[in-house]
Length: 279
Ligand SMILES: NC(=O)c1ccc[n+]([C@@H]2O[C@H](COP(=O)([O-])OP(=O)(O)OC[C@H]3O[C@@H](n4cnc5c(N)ncnc54)[C@H](OP(=O)(O)O)[C@@H]3O)[C@@H](O)[C@H]2O)c1
Image (cartoon, rainbow, N blue to C red; front, side, top):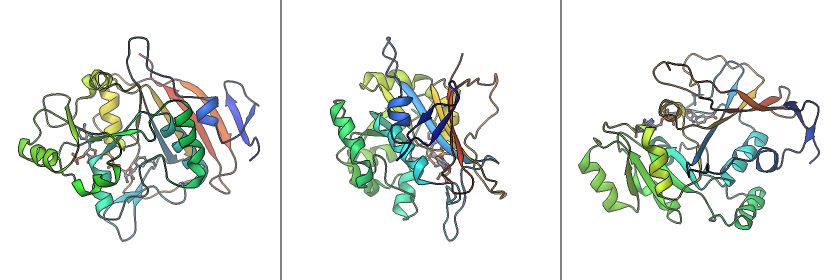
């Protein structure tokens, strides 16, 4: 594959290969000197800001096929390859049970990602990143966790979450429970220290807009990778990548890098941007 990614910022005109763009060119930093884990997330959206639309014949939303593309998916897998922990949500496991999940949790088992598993092994990382599940409802079909029994699985919830449901999940599955905050929802202001206590350094949030909001609100997001597919989707019932109360003060995320990929989605192209949290 050729050098077909054009850097727009900070060094306009440089060309890069897609493979390795986020692994080698813009790698995820490790934890800071005080042991704070580095927490990052990514989204692909359309020009009109949609990350998901209702899926035909399903109860749930999905990433629209018009914007989902293999090149962005490769970058998603490169970000996962660098993680020691993934943050996902109970919603994902409910979708798995309903056969509505769009993909297995990364790193994907397809041969095209063999190089990423090899890369993890050369870095001394575990075969696959561990898993943390955000849930307030504790409505988690434990049978959907079985496929991930080779990884450590954490359930992260609030201290006021339903104790009976929690006990039932602990009895029926290998999950370890972490509580953050006193309500039923996760208050992420103590998340970093809980994850650091458990040895995590690079934490990749692959959940959706309300998990992202919780992370931002608790100052538990360091970096956002954002792909914008250059097309318009419309639609009235859509998700955007941040959902929750208005942020006050607003959160500044200055641009760190931006690239142009003209090859996907076909006929549209996409920009690939990296933003870091700034106090
Ligand atoms: N285009 C993209 O890049 C992209 C990326 C990610 C997701 N998506 C799409 O976006 C859509 C919406 O995503 P989503 O509903 O999965 O994500 P979400 O809005 O982040 O919420 C998912 C679940 O996470 C749990 N949760 C969220 N915040 C929490 C908190 N503070 N404390 C405890 N639990 C919390 C809740 O579980 P409980 O209900 O169990 O309490 C909630 O139902 C989906 O269609 C998905 O496919 C698109």
